[in-house]
Amino acid sequence: MFQLRKYHGDRVQSLTYDDGKKPFSIGIIAPGEYEFGAIKKEITTVTSGKIEVWVEGDEKWKTFEKGETFTIPDHKNFKYKVNEISTYICYYE
Image (cartoon, rainbow, N blue to C red):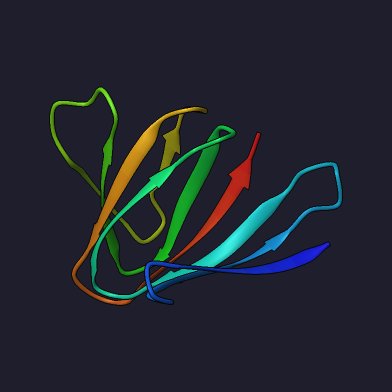
């Protein structure tokens, strides 16, 4: 049900909960630039800090701050740029 995931030399970490109904993760990101791939659609809300996001097919980066939500379509690569410790909650569909 719970799974701790670490990426990019432990600089990005998330705790995922999956009960087979509505999986989600909460995470923390250290300053840096990171690349990921979405298997499922990801709906992410920034809970502290600021995350710059680039999604495959987009022309430019978009910035999201505390309380703002963005969506990553399934089967898309995406990048994060973070200048300060930032946190999020992400729901998978």
